[in-house]
Length: 141
Image 1 (spheres, rainbow, N blue to C red):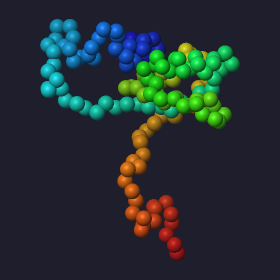
Image 2 (cartoon, rainbow, N blue to C red):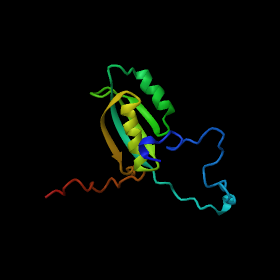
Image 3 (cartoon, rainbow, N blue to C red):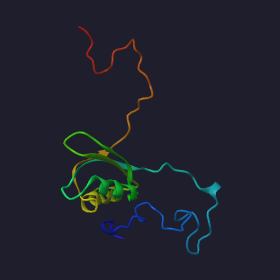
Image 4 (tube, one colour):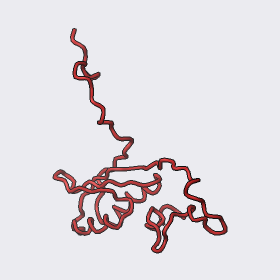
């Protein structure tokens, strides 16, 4: 189906009454795959941070209710800035992610000010040796 006509089920939510994702239960005419033979590959997720501004006819409660039912919405924050909120979206493909951003404009009634794609997380777990200067500081002459 065209990405512009995707339903929420096609973007991540399973239809009511479905217990397993397609392909695990065998599907039409295929034998079911035993769970121990399935190799677990890390799924590549595409994420975006989207800054939105509420429109004159869109109250904040409308945005919150829309995000509660949006399968790509991971988190959202009200902020004090020139925009009203920041929304974190996550999807399995860029097409679905672009569709989710477009739906914020079209269905949630907000103005998308800017959308940033998340490339990768910063590793904040390792600590630097305090005796060595950070690499961005030039050595003393």
